[in-house]
Length: 211
Image (cartoon, rainbow, N blue to C red; front, top):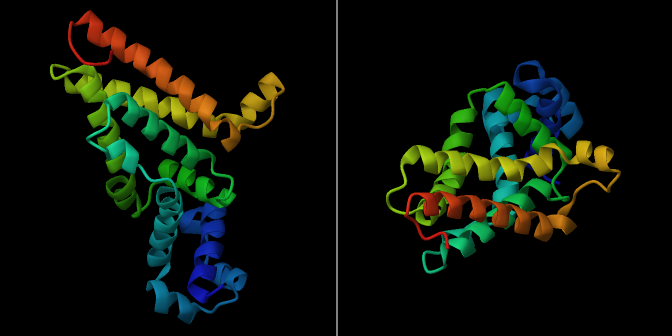
């Protein structure tokens, strides 16, 4: 492993455990088998290393599970929604991602740092924009922005539940911890549940194409 990657991995674990403020470059370098000069060379300073670690953690998931199918304008919106939900749940449950990736992002969202605006603009906003375009199409041209936004949040919430609640669900129901082998079932349920809700809304107002 090269020095830059070693610093990213060691930095990720330290930042996830201690947060940006309390993690130290000394400990990160010790874990990475590197020196402080290497941090300055590759990242500039602690803030630069932290930003790079956040970016790395985010893109490990987005690069592995693309939303391209959900962006295809030639596909029916129902198919785009299916592709979106599948991709997002795979990202959330990917067993090959180190545990610190998710732990770091949870900490960043609860204790925001200078890196949060980039996460929102580069990762979260495109995710929401993609889903908003799908939901708006399903609801119809007359759907107001608040209705679209509420449905988008509901769908995202259903997906993220299976990441955040998987250990609790295993204990409540005596089941195996939710993993990628269950993605098809979970995604199928979320899509069917969401389409039913969207159809009900579009039917009640006499609009939309959620058929």
